Image (cartoon, rainbow, N blue to C red; front, side, top):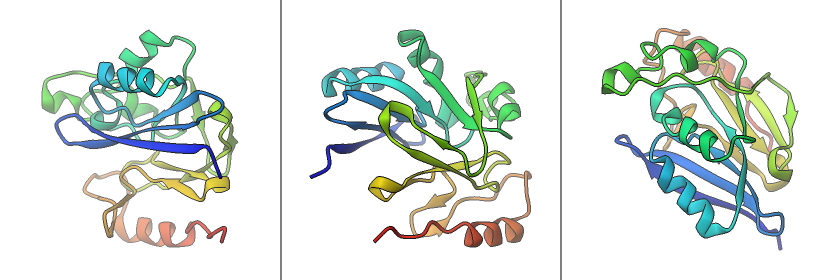
Length: 186
């Protein structure tokens, strides 16, 4: 039986899903999309007895990044990953929409990833899939060994993710997502 675990925590005013992903034996963790409530996320890591080694960002909107600085301050060695085309959103509060909630947020990733790249944070082999649409640099993270796809806002409950931002054209994005469907490992 696998010791791979995913814990889901809705955080912030929008209830964005933040994930703590880890292997019980390694006690190292990945935090995905820490959208807010950094102290709560850190406390959950303590309760799980895991040390965060990486933050994976599916994209750079405020509701996915607001707790990054707080977590990085607690764990300075943590590596922040984001899509290569997401720099503008991460750096500019008017573009990542944090100005709209009156809490300006600007962050920098340590590592910008590209489509098709494979990374290995916290001992979890993870494939990067560029899925521009919701934002120009949106990415999904596929953990093939466990048949898990972390999609951020690329996919929402029963529907493709939102395209309400002027970054790309919806039809072009929908076709792109159809071509990039993740094959089942079953």
